[in-house]
Image (cartoon, each protein chain N blue to C red):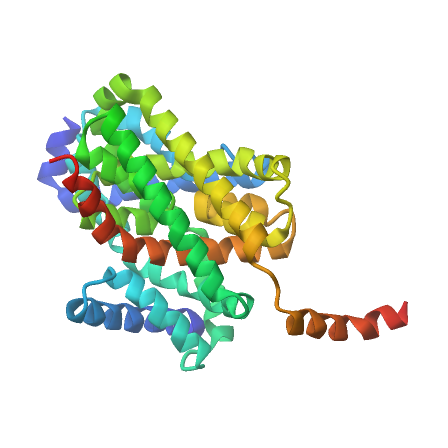
Length: 132
Length: 240
């Protein structure tokens, strides 16, 4: 229970700071500022990741239910779906596959692990293979 | 009859409607947990049960959305909670964050432009075009961004679900068919195109696939939030 309150406190503080950041520079929505601030506070250990992890995972796991009301708006769009249903699917399908292909191809081609990192992993793996 | 009940005792109605929504969602989540079908998405399932229910009981969308205000309020803290996976992936990104961001920025600009132009061409409605342009990010952020740009967020929600399902069901095979097999490339591609739904499927392949996929889903959400407020108005100018 303590950790639940701790997590809610941490999230609320970050959301509050996010609102503040958004009112100063409106480049990102308040909640996204909050998310980045939250990640930074965890990284610099202002909030303990061990304490928040369980409640936070639970929160993420059940987040979908908060999105149902937004999706229910579809009820006002039956006419649009009747008229343009196929167009909607074509647009979503084609743009999703363009994005998949583009990012997949570019990452395969250009994201190369730096040599020193490969050396690091090899060094870490060596004792293990030695045992075998 | 039910509509008058909602106007007469809004609090009680709100509690009941919210409970029904949560219960349906839980049922769907339990079914998905049991059978592991990707298309048995709890959100999609809940919406397809509740829509006929609302039509049957003559409750309109405005009444429903007022009654479920509580769930809407939780959207912002839920987005903040996504900071945890971002923090957990910091290590993963540190070697090539510049290249990764460059690739994602390029991908996002292309996908927003393609979706916007196609929608304006085929459907000719700016609010729908905005909604469809923002369909590659995770749902809570997609909704927030669409509202910010005065698009129609219910269309975004649906488009996001469909994009997620396409990518999750066909994405990995499609990438392997193209010869793109590394965990890094598959993870980034699926995460940026099919967000959480794609990530949930890809994580079964390996933890590394899942890690890259969640990096991509969060980074692309942040980058889309930065890019869309100037790119979409720019695209809109061509149609005035």
